[in-house]
Length: 405
Picture 1: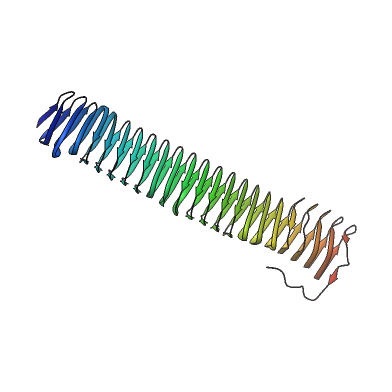
Picture 2: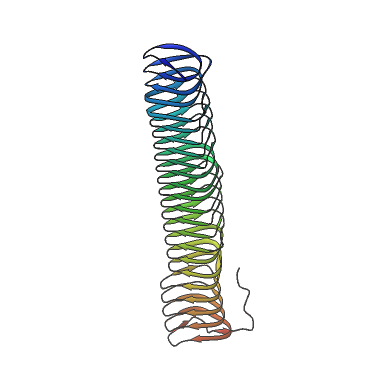
């Protein structure tokens, strides 16, 4: 097998090369149709190829290689301390480039490994993409896994896994397994994902459909969001409806529409729901406001709950010094000491010391010493301890009025 050598600083015209091509520093190669190298194309410094280049293997050292055309490599691309720029389409099996890769046309390889910047003007298709710095792509990204130490800014995606240390900005698409980013995440269009984990802020400008969501800082969703579990350490907002299994918020969170959960809601800070809240169980350490709240099993309120149409649960516990605005409707309602509620509807109602309630409608009602109630209406029993305060005497009826909700 022969070797064609292009001396330092020279300009040559080439066509087919049966063997290897070796180009020294600062050369220019003009192409007759296409430079087809059957072996290795090796560049020792900066070079410019005007036209299409194909080879079995591509190697470069310490320079920038510019290909003003298409580049097709049947095996590997290895650029040590080098950068590669391709104006047309780029195809290879495996790509390992230290400094940077820029491709204006479609790019395809099994694996891209770029130490610095990877920039594409069209689409990119791969199994694995690993970038040490920034990854920018104007078109669609199709791959199994993508990792970037810095940022990822791409169009539509069809991926299994996406990870970046700083920023991820994508148009939309699908990430079947997981998205992980240390800083900020932004999706402009509909996004489907398996899991989303963001250390800082996350913004979905349209709808999102996914699995687990974990955001350390701020989550903003302009449309609807479906999820399996949602955990937000700071603040958040869902402009449309939210639906999933479980939800935990540490700071402040607002939902413009309805929030539907098949399991539990935990609020350490404050949450507002513009329409109906439904869940299996609710635990509020801070504050909850909703048009209505319907809870299948238990609702424990340690802070404050506000509803227009009422809070309904099989068991409602209003803890010490807690506050409830709007009707409480349950199988069992317990009002602990110094807590305050308005109207209460339940089969069993217990109001402890120094707690205050408005009207009480229940089958069985007990007011501890020091408790205060506006009125009590019952069907089975009413126990009013000495020292409890009733503004009007307890009244027994055959049938209680219809409960709200």
